[in-house]
Image 1 (cartoon, rainbow, N blue to C red):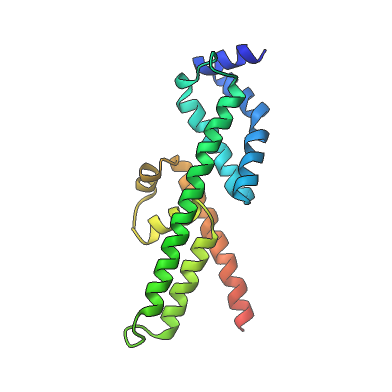
Image 2 (tube, one colour):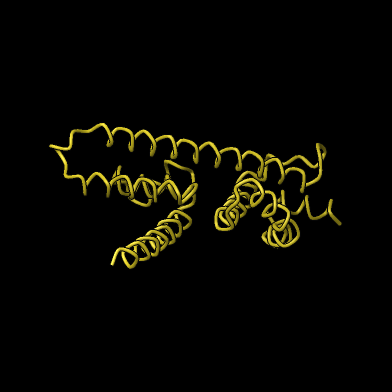
Length: 181
């Protein structure tokens, strides 16, 4: 049964990818959730793993191991990439915050500095890849398509990340705004 599914998957049968997703996405999601600690990130990574598996299915060799083991390998690499991106964004945010804190108050009002630090902190709290995507969209002024090309994340996923991230930022700042009143 698994051998036939693996071969159908490798041959490009859409029903096979659907069945593989139904059978092994909970395993991939669990690995991602344990490593990343965020349900939304784990869901995105799970989707990414199956898109990547489908895109590179010709690399799968049933002689070298079962399909679930190959999916776990893709998952491990995706998790490692996500954690590297997360640490790069965090390091960038910390560097930006440190740079802002050493800036002369005569150039910026203290309120502007505080706002930049709050924004940088909020973006780093988004996690990965959302923090990177938001930074690319707003600091680097890249289009959704350019972000997709630069990160290798599907365009629809980039758009979803931006939308969800903006909603999360809005909710966070609404809570802060209400508390400040």
